[in-house]
Image (cartoon, rainbow, N blue to C red; front, side, top):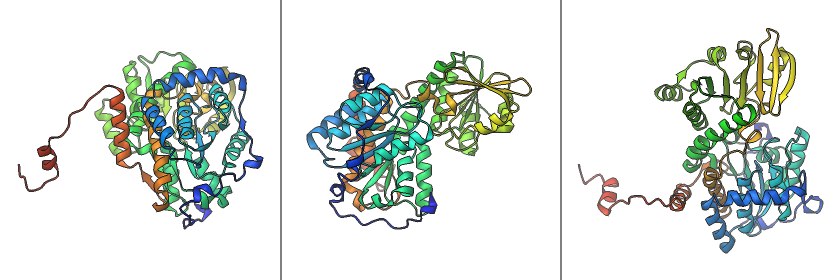
Length: 445
């Protein structure tokens, strides 16, 4: 992406978010979904999630009154789930014109896509897209002419920077939802290739610490159970990567009785895993003894040919990182003497020595491909951050540099406070004396 060569940010007028409101709309489809007959079921499921997302509901009601996004075109490339639907409707009620594409070929819930289309929202996503169809859907969404982009994996930003440079002058900024996307965007910013500011919603404490840990932890195990129905107790479960997602997966696997092994390249994270009670070792050593492997690194080829070759018979391999590149499936295919579908979401690779390796969900996000993704209670905080950051971009984007920004602390704190209120929890407050003590160097001990 650094080859784009964009070094300076296009100059925008203070009213630039109104200039291309209808750009591309003449030949833009209203939606691409699998089956509109699924809309009623999708609407029921969206409502169920809404009842478990009180923070986003409050923000949606506020947006409906204040209309802070009036006339703003938002292109969102996100997992099309019931939780995402509630974010999209909150943005719409705030005045935004939204076009939604799916950020993963296997994560779209077709009934949700149909329900959003039935509400008049431009949605372009269906489960099982091939690569060509995936980018066709994203291209269709981009036709709205974005002022703000929302991403889970940075694909919209990459597409705009590589194929739609003419849209850049009207783009105020963007948001990125996941670690993998933030890594890509920081690399772009470091190379001077990022042409507009982006807020790393992923790095908000009310997102990263809860969504990544509790959401990924629970939903990953849920997806593996749905695909296999195996017993985790007593098995060696290898968690590859010990960031917030890895911590969550390891915690949940341990809670179900698994013997957890962690593979990690970062010394401090590896040390933390040891202190948390897990065995830590290199991937090649773990490959020899693991029964179930779960990758959550955001990097490429963390399980490779040399690892597959030494795995036990009937080892199970799953990925819960954003892209399917964490597992080197071309290498696995090259050493397999037979490949077949054992059951839905389970492919069997038979090696020359007779050992069988089972890959779940084509190596894509197992928690979304084989389950429902994160629970609405944690996505409530993540998407509340997204909604408030979109408003922040609209209000302040013209004064930001072309960098990746953390979520403003006041937004993070507001989301946490609203969540506590919704849970009926009251916290302690500092006395004036305590507050002064914490901000003074003259009060002594």
